[in-house]
Length: 346
Picture 1: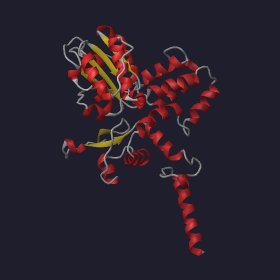
Picture 2: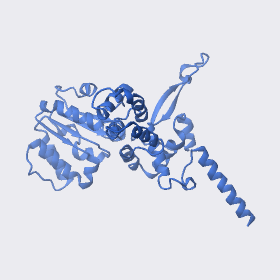
Picture 3: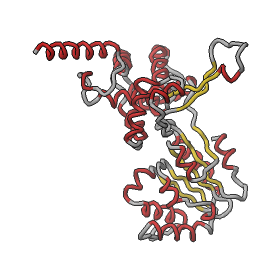
Picture 4: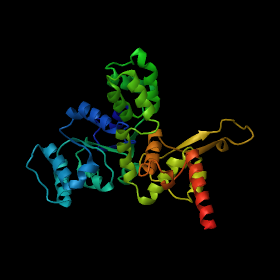
């Protein structure tokens, strides 16, 4: 919240659009709601539009109605089309210093209909946009972007303990299992909260069984949240993502791109590029050659991708589009060798 407030600069007489970008379940909506509740009284009018991507399926003009009704306190406002809504928003929003939050935006059309440009708003207004897709912000010329950082182990332990035990530290006899939860969650708040609620009040054998099951069966609520980003990809990009999730995570970027024959990546908080420094420094080589870019993704996103590949035929690797488990590869190859042998003999 402190970092976001630095970007907002409440009190300056300008119009500011600020993006909050991060992967599903990372806390974008939670952060936007917290800052909205804290600063909304400093504005003449305010509107928080939840789940824009889903709500827009009923028509963007319905969301325009919501913003106009919130800002003008007139619940009788109706706009018949997106075009009419744009004209009315330009007219009504210029008269008040407003705070508008557009939560979970996933397409440029959402911003064109709900926050066209700075001229729509009275100086001093602030528009906060949460999204998984950085390109949506860049396409709308939003230059102030706050990137969500995942939880540290200490923060994750505290959050988990609040849900599982009702206090900030784990119960002593559950410390080992709590650490396993934190390591599994890998900083993702959604997973921490879901597991904390799931394990609250359970006996230790149930904790052990639940944690053991996560090795083969991903946490459903987390997977559903993460799959929203996957489903919004184009078909070709879905194939690229699954290749990275199953095979190419932690590869050098240039090697992975060469493997994918020059295909590009769509940045919807699924794949990240990290600069890695060589573990053994060679003083005879220039500094730049001691570092390289590496393809990375969160463990749960990798898990989600592999689950997509396996779930249609979980017990039949021969029908999977991609294989990465050594025993399954051996099984499939052995079966194919037998099939080819039988076919050739017949």
